Length: 340
Image (tube, rainbow, N blue to C red):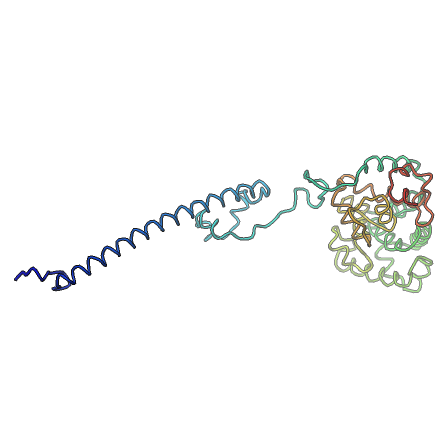
């Protein structure tokens, strides 16, 4: 039976009053549904905008870091990552690795906005002019003059290493005399292993800290024999692990013994002159700080020359005490000379 007061529904029989309530609820639900659809649309637009922004950022990043856009490097990820969509990867984000510029270290080679001291090229040319005589102690008795150029490559490299170990806190004249005595005695891995510490000390005296250097020479020579087949390491990382070898010596050994430029050899002369000329962005306290500061802007093709050039200049003109500023061609541009 059908009554005007009753309606049949799939859920059973309801009164007309209840029907009105249901219709009202259905209307509210419809409104909520429409509102949900609008919200979903807005979210979709927001997500599209976010992804669009990320695309722009990714494009900009790719210009800054070509490695990020290199398919060959991206393909190094896991197989599961290969199947992930580009949008998912952009949503997740992550840390992008940075790569060294081609050619290894040498930020001075990068074509980018970077600090460099004003007028440094002219100052460098002036130092070359003052050094053209090549008659400073480093020119006559430096590490490049102390080894036997008729020896085998292994022995020659070993002698370069020993001469630089002796040169620390020692004048070139004293180092050269000690190297002459060592070569007359026999300066090879085999001969030094057979030499007792007392005899070795007599041979290198009076180099600075000679007793400590005797221990370093013996320890290093044993390591070379046992780990490097009597040769010396061909990289800075292994060189500085040897007793008595620091960064300055390691870079000079690489340059002289292996003919490879790995960095600037900074001793007290280079450290002092770089600060006096204003070749560091801010004053440095140690030679190692100076090395880092110089390598940040100085073109890499000058790294090999700069040690020899400044050491001789420091021995003859830019002396540690009472420098000859009045005779220096840079007296009008050197901050130190103008302040004296």
